[in-house]
Structure formats: C-alpha cells, structure tokens
Image (tube, rainbow, N blue to C red):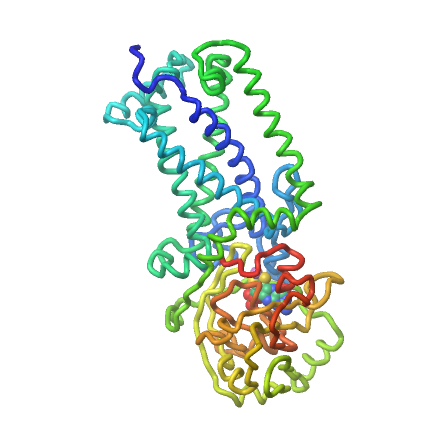
Length: 491
Ligand SMILES: Nc1nc2c(c(=O)[nH]1)N[C@H]1C(S)=C(S)[C@@H](COP(=O)(O)O)O[C@H]1N2
Ligand SMILES: [Mo]
C-alpha cells in the first residue's frame, strides 16, 4: 500500500490517546456507581417499578415500603468509586470532574484532527467503506485475519468502528448525560419531553456498553495482531517492533492501575478534597446551568405518575408517632428567625390560608423522576404573614425526622428567591388526597426549582437566617453535610 499523507501517529495523538483512556476509566467507574444508586432503567418518565427494561436489583417488594435509598446497590470499591452504598454524591464529583477533562481533551483532539490530515484515518470518504467492512468482517469471522496495515490506513471495519466511537458515541454520551440533568431537561421543555430523563439514562447506558465492547475488542486486537508493532505506533510513534514501545505501554498501564487502586480509598479518606477538586473542575459551569424553569400548567392530570418513589428516612420518634396517632391535630409549624411576626401554625390554620394546586415533575439526584399533583399553601402567603426582615437571605427547613443513624435532624436551606417562586408550596395534599406520612405528612416542601433532596418532608420548623455556615457542618443541608452533595445539585 502507498503511504497516505496521514500515515503514522503524531505525538499529540499518542498523548491524547493516553489521556482519553485515563479519563474514561474513572468516568466509567464513577458512572457505574451513579447507576447503582438507582439500579433500574426505564424508557418512561415515571420510573414506575415493574416497567424497567433493565435492573440489577430484585423487583420492588409489594408487601412493605421500599424507598429509593434502600434500592441503592453496593458495588465493590475496586469497581465503583468510592464503592460504598449510596455514595452518589462523591461519584458525581468524580464523574463530572473527569468529564470536563475528557471533553477538553476531546475538543483539542477534534481540532487537531481536522487541522491536519489525520481525520482521513477515521472519517469514511466513500461508500466503498461498507463493502470493505463487510469483507473484513468475513475475514475476521473465518479467522483469516487481514494484514495489519494500521500504520498506513485502517481497514473498513476499523474505520467504521473508530468513526462511530469518536463522532457518534462520544457526542451522544455528552448529550444524554446533559439531558439527565433536571435543570437542563426541565429547561428545554420540548426536547425534555421527547428525550425524557429516563430515556436519556437508558441511551447513556447503551453508550457505556458500546464503549466497553470497543475497549475489549480494540485491546484484544492489539494483543493478537502484531503486538509490538501496534504498541510502537501509539507510544513511540515508530513503525517498528522495538521493546521500547512495550516499556512505555507498561509505564502507562502502571500509572492507570495505581490510580485505579487508590481512587476509592483516597475518596473515602478525603471526601471533602474530592468534592473541592470536582468543584474546581466543573463548579462554575455547573453553577451557571443549575436553573430549573418549572411552569404552571406544564403537566396535566394525565401526566401524573402511577407511582412516585418514596424516599428518605422515615420519622421514628415517639413524639411523631403521637402526633400521627392524633391525626396531627396537635401539630404546630414553627416559623421564626429573622421575621417581623414569628408564628406557630396548626394544620387548620394552614388550611384556612390560600390554597394552590400544581402538577410538577420531581427529580431525585439518584436518577429517578416522576410527576405528581401537590396542593397546599403558597410560600408567598407565608412570607406575607411572617414578614421576613431585610437581613433574611435563606430559609432553613427542619424535619421531624433524623437524616440517618445518629447524625441529627434532616434539614435543608433554601434561598429567598426560591421561596418567592410562584410554584413554591407547603404541601399537605398529594394527587388530590391528604398527604400520606410516606410522602411527608403533615407538611412537606415543594420547591420546584430544586431537586428532591432539598424538598424537606415532615417539616417541623422554618427559620429565616442570613447564612447557613453555622448550621450542621455548614454546607446547607443534611445531604450536603453528610453525602457531599452540592448545595444545589440540579445538574
Ligand atoms: N425529612 C426528610 N425529607 C426528605 C428526605 C429525607 O430523607 N428526610 N429525602 C428527600 C429526598 S432524597 C427525596 S427524593 C424526596 C422524596 O420525596 P417523596 O418521598 O415524596 O418522593 O424527599 C426529600 N425529603
Ligand atoms: Mo432524592
């Protein structure tokens, strides 16, 4: 074969190939960890148990309450990052942080590819590629391997595989990743209806399967066709069979293996550091995009999900049991802090206030979603009643339940802007009926510009504050303190 202008592998391509592999390893591990937090895939927006087309968890039990947190699966630490159960908070920092690096690497790769002749290696320029690929496939299947001409040009099958991976699978991973984000999925109304969050999760998973198959076949072919030659192409950039290629390859693999082995233990030892690094890498971009744009009337009765996954740690105190036994007649919502008029309100007081009903989509950080109708007191009416002082910047919601074993009260902090939103409610009804304890009775928050974990259920008190540094560990909520979630995590 005549050497083409793009024969050989320039230095930038060799280094980018290494970085690509390095980033992908951790993106994949953290991604599988994220999937394990809700180990079910659906095509419908409702995440209805029983309608999943894939799961690696037993069917949802019907004889007992089964929360989304209980459904989370534990992965071994060598596989997921960091491996322990329900560690999506930390896995997300890894996944998104490395995504950023991977995308920067990818964009540079695209630019260099097209500003040199290298693109001709992996972009088919004639339909001949199809018959060529078919005949190569037949050769492979009959174990009569075609000569490895990889230095000069790829055969039809390689061409198609590389083209699909670089120009279809990689962009699809990005698009379906973004469309899983509550903020983005909710903002692009029309696109979000077609590529709903669950469909985006499912396609994202197919991309994973493609990439894993590609890595497996690609690596196998490296080993069984002219091993040293292949290694030299991608390491030394020489068309030779020198052992130097093998040595560089071995060093690269050693770097990856060491990083692989330390990733989970280091994450568990220094979780805040992982969070900080992740925030440096993705934080500003993430912050800029973290805006849901829920509209009244966006969903109608027929959109209501047959089942909304319950979540959270149920209240288990004697006091709560007593309140529940008395149908919450003795329940009082305490509202104080930086307000002109602190109050204590009974359910009857709340029911006497203005009533608002809305049908909205709920997004849990774990990956599930669902639509429900909520009824209760608009937060604007509460603001009018208590009169927040000008210093009030945030509202802390405290639950009548703990967040986890011995770690204190579940709470979360919201901005005043969120409180003034027309869809922010203190809900005591769900789908036209009195709210059940499972979903937060006597009173739960609906702040539709936020994701699930911020919507405190079983609310005991609301406090208007200037800053949340002094509450809990100072991160703005129970999950922010203990699960390393971001203050807003709607991406
Ligand atoms: N008090 C309290 N509120 C909570 C939680 C919790 O653990 N405790 N979990 C949150 C999470 S993670 C989600 S997704 C929603 C779930 O609401 P649902 O059970 O009505 O679906 O409640 C939120 N509110
Ligand atoms: Mo959640």
